[in-house]
Length: 470
Image 1 (cartoon, helix red, strand yellow):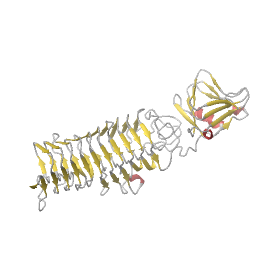
Image 2 (cartoon, helix red, strand yellow):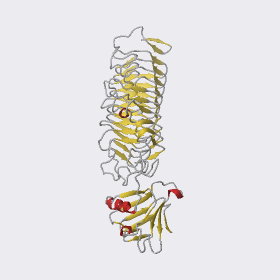
Image 3 (cartoon, helix red, strand yellow):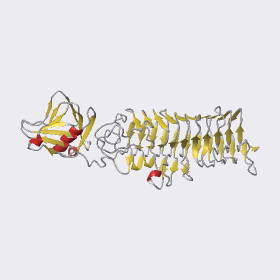
Image 4 (cartoon, helix red, strand yellow):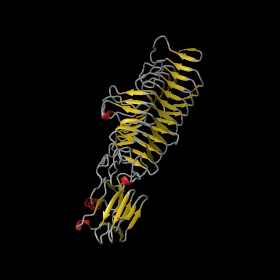
């Protein structure tokens, strides 16, 4: 390579491999880049780094640029050959490099991104593929990458994790696009996790404004994160926001393994799915009114997770009757349960059309509720107890925990659901277990009729509930 004004310039023709590196090959030792540029270099080997290849040793980049280089895999920088290989990026830019897979490829060793930009390269921004490979993102940005499926290439656009560990403490992955064309199982605009472990741990870490597109529904999953295979995602903090896809605008979880996606903190906000699952799409979805314990069990969502502002093209759904212990948060874009299709792809009650409309339906639903499990029953319209024996008080058994809510919880007279009991000497409910009246539920009593009898159980009236004479 010739040198001019602190820049490495391309040769007049492609040299044979140059030790499998185009610009700089670090076999052993230290390479420090304070400024200048490495540009227009070529590696003719599929294993070569177009700009820099670190076989062993340390490459530290403080500023400058690595741009316009060509390499099949690692067109900007490639780490491999030894677990001691390290690339520390404090600033500068890796941009507009051209390759088939990724601009930065970590096959072995460690990359630490503290600041700077990996942007607008052909192929993925960063790929981690070796079992001992580790990518630590403390700051900086990864943006402007578009990956289109060709020949079965399902790489994610921003970061692709095939093996090893990706730890995201800070920084932003944004404005990346995965085009899955028609290949099923594609997706991952921001991050794709096919194997290894992705840990998102910092409150300043952001996955934002990424998208997954495709010509078929199965080819567009996970605008922000796509999980598949034996990969695991663990999130304790951070923000997944304003991403889009056909399914799973924020996150798509493909694997059926228990605990494939674990989130105990952070937020999933303002993501959009044109189909279902604005915040998260789970392949383990079940859409019955009462969910089995195995439903959605590839997700583990803690009580501290925040959902808000997510949407889905197929609309929102009233949640199921029971809550799942592994989806603990009550934060939601609508209702008080993220299993509403806007946040997580439960579609059992799209448009809320399946609420309870008669005294008999309410009695049957309470009797069918699972034992010792909080069960929410949605009241679609007002109704009255029949005047015959079918209008007797509804008994809440000792092992039932029933919560009654209106299908529309916005405070307004039109949204109030009135349950009327005018049969003499008959109550609405006899409570041996647990009964909670939720928002917009009103019990209408008559002379010596209606109301609640507590017979050893517990009765709770929430804000917006009423017992009135009428």
